[in-house]
Image (tube, rainbow, N blue to C red):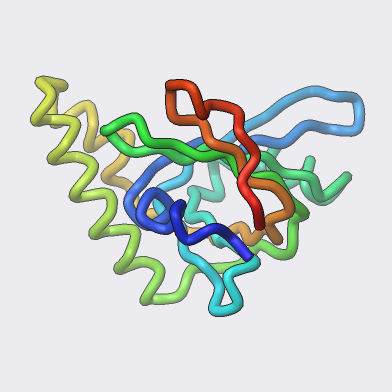
Length: 152
């Protein structure tokens, strides 16, 4: 099971969904929110399909994924696992993403970043869910625990 300590960051954070081809050519897409499966073994990441074509091609090729998710406080985690499916987002997932994106835009503009620039990147609705069965979780928060593998 995905460690409970990561749940807030999963629900409130943003990150990068990374893959590599069989020829080890990397690709990534930004995540615009995520949800946790009822059994706490899978994560569905919200993304924009138009920006995820190579990621999806790599997942079709070998199914391996590495995802970084963090929040403004710098708390962050890396999830590694096996691709399960990609699909359209549910209306509930769209609502989760909208709330998450609006919060992120406010936090980042509060740091002095230009709000219109943040909205161009994070204001656009995701249209695809990419689900991964989590096999490993690592702390990515800067500090003495960085790199530590968490029990799942």
